[in-house]
Image (cartoon, rainbow, N blue to C red; front, top):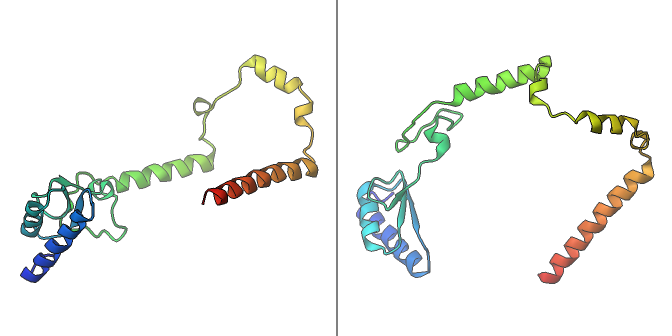
Length: 160
């Protein structure tokens, strides 16, 4: 992008149109560094570079790429500087989690919240909470949700 004189002039024209149309900033992605510098010098609004060299007013580097979590096919763009390769560590952590859940070692007591004894005793003595839920309870519950959704939709329709 921005490799030929014609491309540079067209990008500059489009950038000026965007600025005049009220853009508050312009992102230049994978634009040649000299082209980005030229466009930045023409504009009053800031330019944000993604792989467009050091002459933009700000820089973006996707943190997935920066941390080595990028493309599944290990495709890395030229402008990406990788500061870490966390993908193997994350895969190991997730595998460990899955293993712990399957073998029952997670969640352990240290990872679990418990009721105070007084509340647990009161709850255990409260037989009404343990009654079976009948179909009318479920039906009433869903009717209330549907009524709420219908009202929300009606109110939104009124606003529109």
